[in-house]
Amino acid sequence: MGLRKWGGLRTWGDAESVPIGTVTIGTVSATQATAQVNFSYSGTDETGYKYRLNSGTPIDINSTNPFTIPNLTAGTQYTVEVVAYNATGDGNYSALTSFTTEAEPVSPIGTITFGSISVTESTASVPFSYNAADETGYEYQLGSGAIISATSPISLSGLTDGTLYAIKVRAINATGSGDWYSDNFTTETAQSIPVGTVTIGAIAVTQTSAQVNFTYSNTDATGYKYRLNNGLAIDINNTNPFTITGLTSDTSYTVEVLAYNAVGDGSYSAASSFTTEAEVVITSNIYILDQKVPNGTYLGDVWNVSEGVRVGTGMQSFVFLDGESTLAVPLPVNTEYQYLIKGDNPRATGIADFGFTI
Image (cartoon, rainbow, N blue to C red; front, top):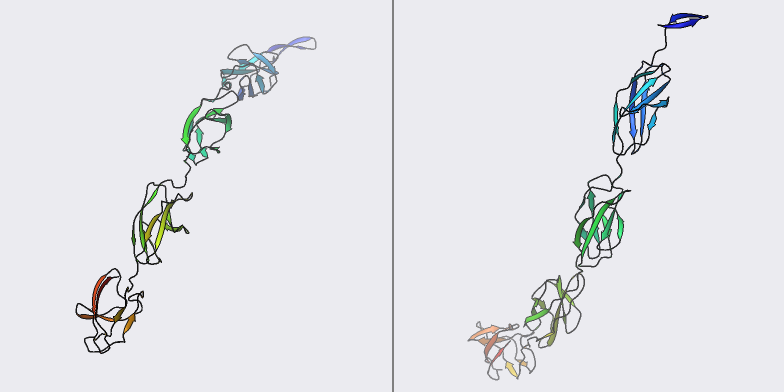
């Protein structure tokens, strides 16, 4: 109770008290140098508010809500309290509320890790990752070249084949740059045409074909070609030995072989010469007579085979071989024969005894 004045008289009545409501601090938003404080009050008996920082000197903020605390130190923890006041005095302070100002920005401190680098003869793709969130970007340097802004993966072009390169990457932010992290890679070696040597070996011939053996001194070939008498190249893939067919008997040829791959053809081997086998011809006039087979039948007339006519081509005749009659249509090649041909009818004109090889 207090003394109240009424009509010139003093009377006892209720005196005004300090604020008795409760101040509750809400969110505190801090920067490096300031903090904005929101609060609420549960009564209506206040005329203003004060705050104090770290239990220090109260600062009058009148009725400002939220209010801002200036001149703070970055990366520092503080406590703040708020009190309501009126003409009578101050109420009770709120509970202490802690907050920490933002730290001053620093250069990136995370670690960069490289992924698997893929390369071609002239390009490279360099993936990397970063294990922090304090960066705003990245930079890379290839060898001692310029420092260039980067994203992952780094795409490099215009490189030299078969060359070792060093690359380094760092994170950056507004404050500065982090540490460099390095890796290296080697571009693929450019594939060239085959550079080995083809050597032709043994050549086995018949009257109409030749089988050619060869060797190659390297491992850069995917196939082979040959040419006959400097003609068109014939692809034989990887066939070794290979056979040339459709040749003419008793004829000289040259053959060359080259190796090839996806890039192109290598050099031809040295030319190797060969000659097909000759066909057997009658070199003198021989009369092949009608022959009597064991059942007593006579076949045909006398064949007059003149000099130069091929034996056994389109011709039938019976001859005695080791005392037996044999029909040759035509005679097998690559075989040595000794024939005794005898006449066995009235038209016989003589006996011929000769040997030859087909």
